[in-house]
Amino acid sequence: MSKLYKLSAKEVNTGIRSGEFTAEEYIIQILERIDKVNPKVNAVICIDRNGALEKARLVDRKIREDEKIGPLAGIAIGIKDNICTSGLKTTCASKMLEEYVPPYDATVVRRLKDDDAIIIGKLNLDEFAMGSSTEFSSFGPTSNPWNTDYVAGGSSGGSAASVAASECSVSLGSDTGGSIRCPASFCSVVGLKPTYGLVSRFGLIPYANSLEQIGPIGKTVSDVVMIMKTIAGADDNDQTVQVTYRTPDYTFSSNEKMRIGLVRELTEGAEPEISKRIYSAMDLFTNLDCKCEEISMNYVDYALASYYTIAMAEASSNLSRYDNIRYGFNFTPDGYEWNAYFAKVRSNFGDEVKRRIIVGTYVLSSAYYGKYYLKAQKIRTMLKQELRSLFKKYDILIAPTMPILPFKFGEKIDDPIKMFMIDIDTVIANLAGVPAITVPAGFSNDLPIGLQIMASEFQEQKLFNAALLFESNTNINRSPEL
Ligand code: GLN
Image (cartoon, rainbow, N blue to C red):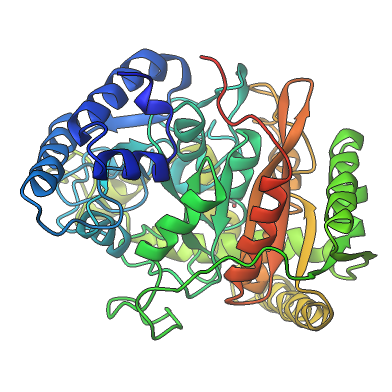
């Protein structure tokens, strides 16, 4: 059997349905692939061998017996380890949740299973999804499959690297301030942060609820769309889902004359090789009959400060629940006075998480609330309004996904500000709640560059049209040799 593990999700699905190969044959190859490359990449932190093989056999049986099968039949998918999987450890790459086995599936996971996808395991991330390089993981960092001396990006580093390294066909990540798009861009794959309120967050262990969404990562735009059809839509368990339909209906029409704005501040602020790529993407769209122009955004300079203030405030409140009583690791309170126990237990958080709890508590304290938290919210509203008026004139906005190329391990880990700065291009979509996708746009020094496309709320269709148009007119490698 040729290299089945390299196939896109769509190809896998077609191959299995047509009887070209079985789900079991494919999953065996995927598991062998993980065994071979994961020691180099460290993207998968928990492999569910038995579960995956069992599901593959079930899919094969359904096909053999002509039973109804789901639209994702046979596709190997990996899940970021901050999304709950019933009976399978969900650690957030934190010592705090080392032993946590959720008693339920996140809505997105349940839907994937119902549609006959095969969950191969859990994927690495920065602890509690806080970071941009996956270096803050208690499982050790994830390497970039294009060059293992470099970071894979974060926080969903495992989700992007596992897809690029062909350890699974598609994956789920979460994106609070760029965590799907940053690693997808660094690993030369496609990653989508959906509109806030399109995908259920039930079962996503929260970092900053008002900003984050679960979204797919895949090798192609159509793989990402395929997963969205399964995971998006109304959910009784998450009242922040704003749509009433269960399955979105995406149909492609890539030749409409799109109006495109290139965000000057974000593009000019990037490394020269990166901004060059984004300008040539604009030229490409122009040649394809789109109406492109450069535009300016006023509030870009304040976006990062606003994002980190809000994100840390929400994190400090979310993380207060970890007292190791309800869930956690093996350590009994016997013999401890409560405060001593609480302090001891919470020292299990990593330094980055601790820093955020402390800063978040500070910006919410009564003396500083107005000065920081409230101000950050005001900026968020202004940014939202600015984008709203821009989207009256433009169907989509384009910019780099990341202002820099993937960097070497250790380069930014000691300087939080340096690490925060690289999120400048991605946090805007989270603050405004709009959808954003990254698609591979080329390489510089053999390291990937991503093009980011943003659209107005619930206009995923426009994102997909533009992303597909770009993808089908470029030919950028998504499969590194490993
Ligand atoms: N790097 C950003 C942060 O650390 C984004 C993380 C995320 O999207 N989960 O907050």
